[in-house]
Image 1 (cartoon, rainbow, N blue to C red):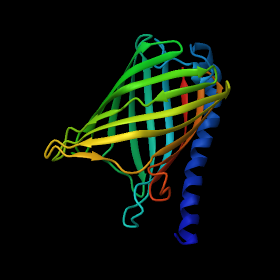
Image 2 (image 1 turned 135 degrees about the vertical axis):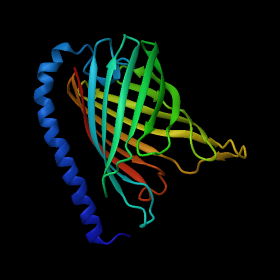
Image 3 (image 1 turned 180 degrees about the horizontal axis):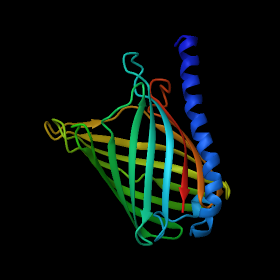
Image 4 (image 1 turned 60 degrees about the vertical axis):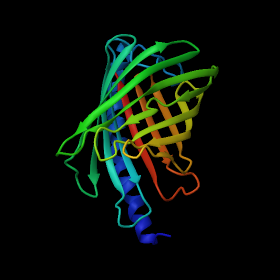
Length: 263
């Protein structure tokens, strides 16, 4: 059990970061009034295509607070997740992402990640294939290549079942070059055009190491809760709470608050 002073200090840190994001939201709400006319997508997230339409772009930003381990020697971190993307065609989009650690100290070894999405199914059952890769500055190893399918099936007009978009991860650095295969699934609920809710987990996660061909089944049950508020089809405000293991929720988790602007 953490001392009350540490709990209060961490809470104050999260609230301080949240205030920065909320101020940015006010600016984006004004900006989205002008952007809305050029955005060709529904307001309801459940009805949107799996990739950005041709000529449409997005920018995003989020503050993320992460506890990676219950070990007090490992610092909790706060990072900024910045992103930008564009639809090249009605079926293909490209997104760049930059996670920047700012606490407990600014990390100069910033990663730059790139994702390419290709839509191959539309309608009640929609899906897009994704390939993500990248690199890290400061001499750090190249980021893993991740592949997968972002699929969604509409059970009703307001409820959908979905999968994640990076099921297969292939490390390109390190001694063992681990390969990880996972099956993330979730349920989405759209009670109103402006409100979108998700709950997601992983049915399984398998790790295969190329040095000794050891098959590793990951322990723990992850759980992610996400809420989106979309004042218009050009702006999403979102919050996420992700637990690494539902059985031990305080050991490792991440909290995020952010915005997406489409134009």
